[in-house]
Structure formats: structure tokens, C-alpha cells
Image: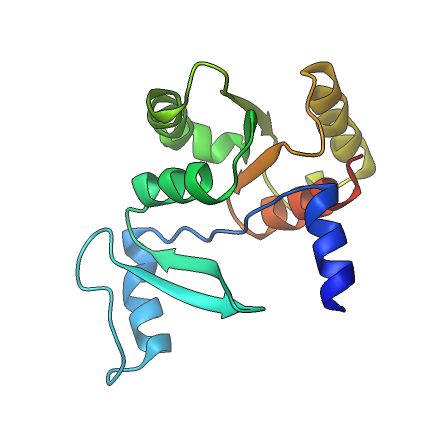
Length: 166
């Protein structure tokens, strides 16, 4: 993808891909990084992967505050939308994100959320349409920032939805 097309895509709709790893995956991630490289020995430590000269992927454990701070600082918007699945909601992560987000936003900014059913079987046109209908009903525009929290199905579906919205 050329730099011009990449910039155009960013203008059409901002989306930040951030991967969250639970304590369960920390050991696996350290193995992937190798014993001689930097490790995530403590909660909140962040490994960053550069793509097109920008720290695009942030990897770590217990990163809620980091993710929120990064989004608010680097992706200025009047509206942030967290899209996740019901498994994440059951674990309490959505409520935690919403509370922390709300405490850091200005009065002219807002955070919304949308919950979908989990799993590959729900990566459908119907689900995509429901998400788009929700975004439109809430007055979301091209400058809306979407945070996808979940596994591969959420990342795939929300990434595609964000790329085609507006």
C-alpha cells in the first residue's frame, strides 16, 4: 500500500490496533521475544512494534491505562467507541475501560460501547450491519476512533467494519 493510500485510509476512518494479553499469555509472549531480548517482567511494561515508522502495535500485560492514554493523546476525536464481545463483558473489562475512559475525557468528548456475540460464527454481514447502524444512530463520523477488545474474530470484524464505514 502506498503512503498516499495509507494516509487516505487513515483519513477515512481512524482505527488503532492494540493487542491485549492476559497473564496467561505473558509467558508465551516472552518466549516469542526470546530470552535475550527485552521481557515484560512487570505489569504495564509495553513492547512496541513499528509499522510505517509509527509504533502501531503495543503488546503487554495490564495495559488499560496505557491504551486509553495513547488513544486520547494520539487519536484525537470527539467520539471513541469500544466494540467487544459478551465474553469480555462477563470478565468486567468493558466496565473498567468505560470508567477509566470517561474519567480522562473532556466534556466535549464521549465514549460509547457496543457488544456482539463471541466467535467466528458471528463474523457476518448481519453483525457488521448492526454495528454500522449503531454507529450511525449515535452520530459517529469519519473521525470516530474504534477500539476493538477481544480475540481474532473481534479484530477481524471490527477492522473490516471500520475500514468500510463512511
